[in-house]
Length: 368
Ligand code: SF4
Image (cartoon, rainbow, N blue to C red; front, top):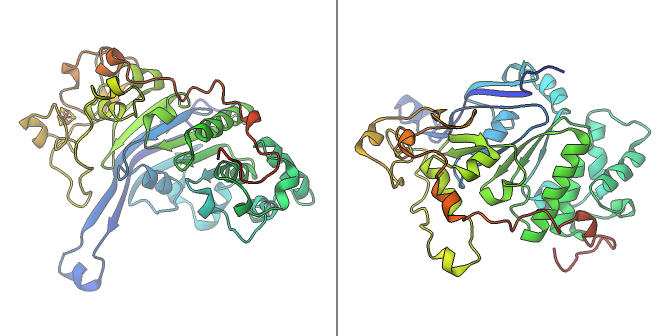
């Protein structure tokens, strides 16, 4: 065990070439979609880092590039001191025993023709683990994620969405990983079920000492879950902070907009919100200067010419950084989000003990 971060990402880029035919290349007409364009972050051992942004911000591509499910265009990904981008296919396969992924849609990530038992044994077989003990390991995994072991002979379609996501988590845990990349694992679930799955992940992190990269498009989902949060916009990280700092004192105008976008159940408060207008610009033709300037309420002419680096904010707590040339003009600690108290506790984990989830009969329950 060392004090160095478990994961260190530096200058990560993933560009997709759109016109990649020979003639296009010869004519120099190749177009590059800059899905991830120079991302730096690190994750300490046992830490949960939230990566948040709208659809199209590049967060899922960042995760896939980190795991080399998409080959990075540039940059380094050091995992426990080893640069994953330099590993051969065989070395990367061995490394994937230590790094597992939980996908957004368990319905499509689980082979519907295999039983849950077969699905849970598959990663053990790939990595040659638990030989002669796999049935017992399946029962253990089912219990770990709050599912009755006797249901392991059923097929994915016989389970509800929340139960399938529990299977997806069990599958990720099957090979005893240290690091889990959870790519929008609750986005497809009802709110009450989201809380149950978040509870489960929090319990597992404590019990198994996991390090987690948790991807979400909704800041409210990660409020109770992440130690630190990195906010992505158009392929770049624009703000990173301790979880409580980000919610109490958001500094980048984009982060403030995301916080405003959290659904407000009180109609009176909801009317006071100003929604973020427009859509994320195309990464094929990103805006000049600050990539957020076309939607930013604080934009100046200078913003159109200057691409701001991610830098520490003066007067802020350690580790609070933002990419905005005007950020020091915003008074720290008086973010409008804190003043208007637009962040509520409806995702509070109290009252959502996953032990209460109706899974005993293994069928589709009414509330999932
Ligand atoms: S640099 Fe300018 S456009 Fe970009 S976030 Fe800051 S104020 Fe807005």
